Length: 113
Image (tube, rainbow, N blue to C red; front, side):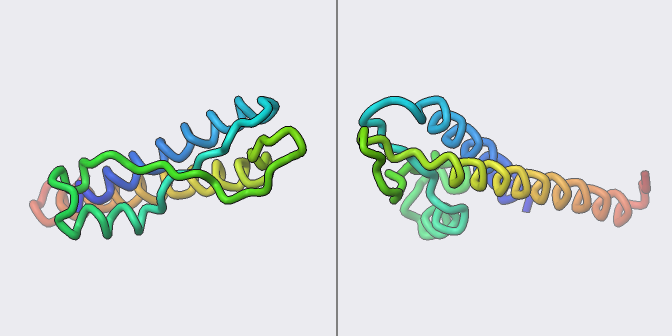
């Protein structure tokens, strides 16, 4: 459980990094925006045995499927802001679930808070 939640937090951080990189290149002619594979796709790949590292494996980046501007740039600032907010929510969810799981384990062991 902790490995999955850790992977979820790592995925959110990597997603933020990809969005930040795309935003930094928003005015660069010909730049092709990237996106991170979904967490569900990552877990399916990690759980299928295709990745020997399991949930510690690296995330795959893909080219974003957005329309190109006249200068050939495919960064959509609106999409990047949405992706960034979504990653923040995913990170908060992972940390909350991690904390609550620790609380449950402490309670089960009789240690409380």
